[in-house]
Length: 106
Image (cartoon, rainbow, N blue to C red):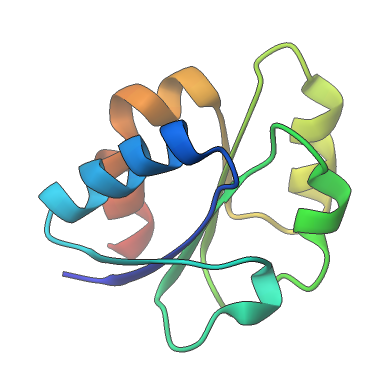
């Protein structure tokens, strides 16, 4: 079990991600920005809107998983340039979220 910070303003999708991670045994806490991470082992970020603000202040030592709309390749590139550990399309996050988190914690 790991402590995971989740930054996802989309309440519906955020609850889906949170539920999947909790079902996999993780302790999940919603955060309003990357700088609000306090002791978590991983940060998961929704980049589907206002992504520039969400990429500010990423904790450099913390593994980060971000997801984006598959049609916005510029968002993926910006996240990779900002140092996000793994960037995946939103559809992949929906299907494989818990497994993706596990791969970053291993």
